Amino acid sequence: MGKLTKNENDLTFVEIRLGSVNLEGNLFVPKNPVGIVLFAHGSGSGRMSPRNRFVARELNQKGIATLLFDLLTLDEEEVDMHTAHLRFDISLLSDRLVETTNWLLKNSKISNLNIGYFGASTGAAAALVAASEKHDVVKAVVSRGGRPDLAGSSLGLVKCPTLLIVGGYDDVVIDLNKEAMAKMSSEKKLVIIPEATHLFEEHGKLEEVAKYACDWFVKYLGESK
Image (cartoon, rainbow, N blue to C red; front, side):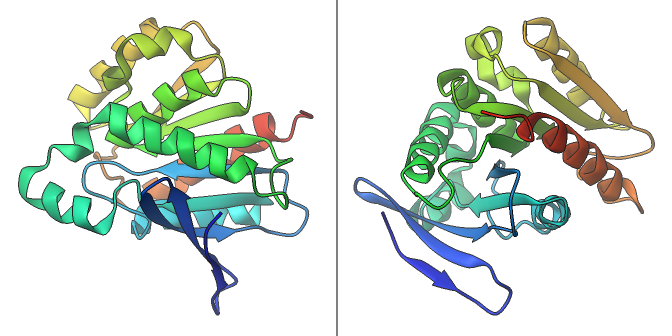
């Protein structure tokens, strides 16, 4: 399965072995968790993203387990820093997310939990493609400043409730999210955070993102399997 190591913050470092590829992640499981959310990072980001780590901590406070992991290996990240092409390889990213979900389902300690995906930027597209493939186990998706349009034909195959969160100043991404929503037949909702830019760096805006995400996941992951 891979290596699991505790650190001083009660996070478990996990080495996710997917065939010949090893991915690194941080797993946090609160007491009596109501579900688990896997984070799909995009656009050159990873498990150390301060924004996603903030959202993860808020989810933990609500009793939701989280797995933040790097979709790319260290070597791949180095290549992507120069070419920026792997972060847009939605097929690769979604395959990694599907495989990591399968890895998670083999972990007997948390395999009984309802699963959600939180995707940011291009990771949102990967989350939606993976959700369309794992529709039997993925119960909810949340996108933050995402590019769901890059999920293409998979949008119509998504079955779980999906929340799209976009900054009010992020005009182009708002339009792309609206176009993606029009292609989705599942329950869906678009939330536009007023006076927020793409990264929600303005005071209090990331807190709003976290609140919407927490409410969405608590609602849909808390349901019985």
